[in-house]
Image (cartoon, rainbow, N blue to C red; front, side, top):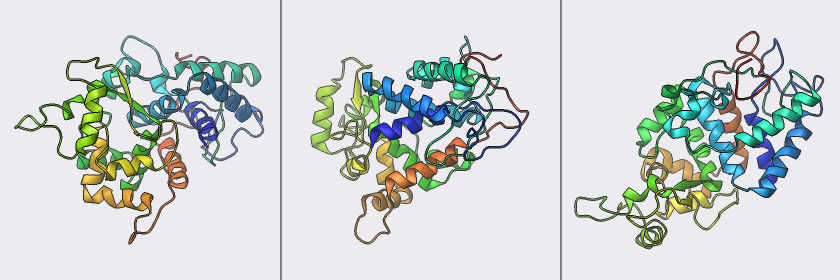
Length: 304
């Protein structure tokens, strides 16, 4: 399941397009029919040598769409570009996109990627990338109300929020982004009470109080590298790593969607893989540039 997913991720992340039309399915069937096979092959090659490419590309796509829309502004290099903003300093996967883009340019100059899972294509690249605009991305301490507002502002709903955060099933994070939950979280000096005590002990061993804050830990304990619903099971059991993730269970408005993905008795079930694709389609259409807007970059990291 994971390899097809990764082919989808990278294709979604190569945001550039051909001239003059809006997004649609099959946008490149005539102008660059080999685009998808080129991208899929590139992703497969990189993923086989480094599985971290999977969550890296997913996270990068999210960080791009939530700033200026899905216009690849996060790919632009520069001393004050989005790539230099604090939330983006740990992004990875740029080399995969550059590799795929160079092969696409060789095969189809001025034309870029298609999408799997029926995602409409036809985006153009943005020409503006400002670090300060990336500082308002959803954060790991945000309340559910704050998260819902950020998603609503982008045309996404509460189900999209829970679904897209579910992408953390293949993600990792650094100790520095959740260690505060393990030590002196309460006034009495205890850990975050929403965490399972045994899980606290497990995380304290991985991320000691004065240990390496950059050490990476799986966001989906017990299901590393598998795109499945174990992430939601962990939330139900108080084993969410990030505070913002765990709140999906403690808040009633989002808990119902977690329950539906788990197929718990008494709730109408949802199929995570199917709904994730739908929500990715919605997110990939946030404020897209088409027609004469933006440009088609020759190099992903620089405007023409």
